[in-house]
Image 1 (cartoon, helix red, strand yellow):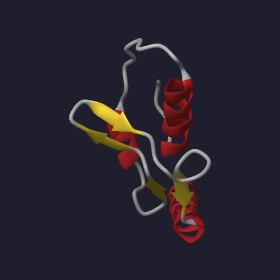
Image 2 (cartoon, helix red, strand yellow):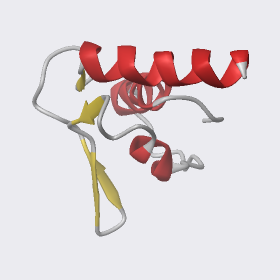
Image 3 (cartoon, one colour):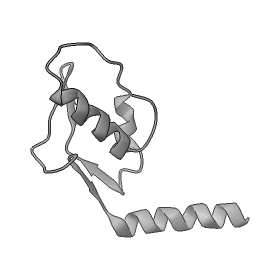
Length: 80
């Protein structure tokens, strides 16, 4: 699945959930923990399986205010 934000992970998991095969795929599920104050994901890993969320879209909600705060931190870091 590669690395990226929980949005990238959710897109890959959604694609996988829509497939009609039981092909195994590597999953870096800890990607869902990136910036937990920004991304709230409905994807849940339990007992070796990932449950498809009942939320719309990719199952990820974004706190825009928290994202703006994180972006501001990066900007301050780059200027230092």
